[in-house]
Image (tube, rainbow, N blue to C red; front, side, top):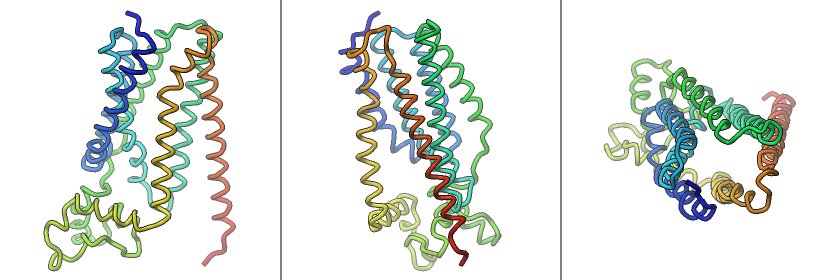
Length: 287
């Protein structure tokens, strides 16, 4: 069954946008409640389903289901982005963020180069590329099963950690306690005698954290930048491959090469930023 580009633009791609929007908040809550790893496994399963549908499906409805699972995969990226921070100290957050992002960009670069070479020089079909991709995401799913399970998270697992600290003073701190090492705890962390039960609820803690972010100009500016930057990025990402079929001949499509070049440049800039930051840290005087 042939699916026209009009169907891709108006019937298939919008499913990704709306499913991503619908699943994002539940994915965030489940990520914190289940401590990251189960959501990473769900992401891996969704990726396997995506490539199975791409390989076996050929109808409009099946492609819409594929986009729905792609929305789940994108929403579950919050677990990937925050998982590593639950395993390291806040001092390493900036460095870990750079390495994490660089590894993603490197993977995109390698896959884009291999895909472009296979299509341009190897005469490999899209079905074969789908099978290869299915093998890689299946291996990634197996790796997610082997990841260590964090013992703490940002909101839902704070009460347990607080009780453990009362019994064992040397117990590990929760993430919010590590982020606020000087004791700048939100109002929900007040003593049991003065705080009511509703102030200790997880959702109130979340609202307090949102308020704290809004009150800080740097975080407020960064949040606005992230919103507008992500909007433009995903608009281009979702529709650029449709445009490639319009401006290029079917046998001379170099979208893989273009994506590889862009991710390589971003990766280089990311590493230069990390090296520059480390040099500044090492040259700063000791207090």
